[in-house]
Amino acid sequence: MRRGTDIANHNKRGLKPLLRKGLKIVFIGTQPGVRSLRCKCYYADRSNSFYCDLHDTKLTRGPRPINHGEYGSLLKEGFGLDDVNNNPYALKARLTKHKPKVICFNSKRALLDFLHKKRIKGSWAGSDARKHVTLGTFSWNPLIWALYDSSGRARAYHKQRIKLLNSLKTKII
Image 1 (cartoon, one colour):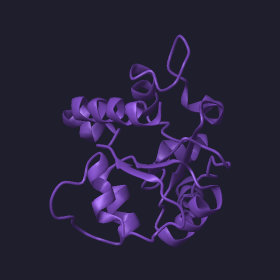
Image 2 (cartoon, one colour):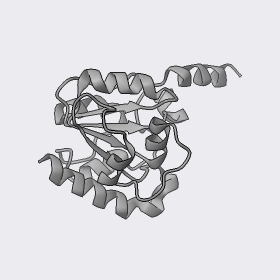
Image 3 (cartoon, rainbow, N blue to C red):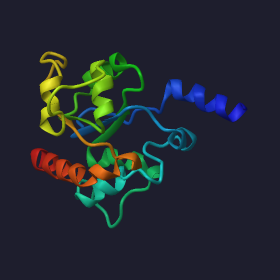
Image 4 (spheres, one colour):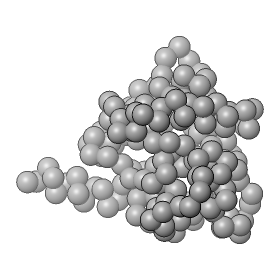
């Protein structure tokens, strides 16, 4: 019982955002999963392809994908991590403070949660995410992008996810 309570309480706080000024991309998730909360690391579930996808698309350098425990090294690559975590207003404030060049929602659910919506009409992936984010939401003009989920539950969309990541890469290089 105690362990479950600790995770529930930690989930309200989430994980500490990985942010600083001057980032190329901030990847936005919905909220950390149970394993991520236990490990205190973003995208820690073994079925999540997040770090492998960054490596496979050559967004991260190195001979292998980074391990979830090494997620802090993403800052050196110019990438940050954060979550909507049921508080899109706080997320918007953090993004506004750090002004990344690209805000990339790591799932349709993350985009929906940020927008306070249950559904989106029409296309939403890739650069189409911008159509759903009201102009003036941000005081600067970041590229808004959305990917198919990296979790194991969305494995059927993995090829589309990689294609979208490769397309995003061409926009930031």
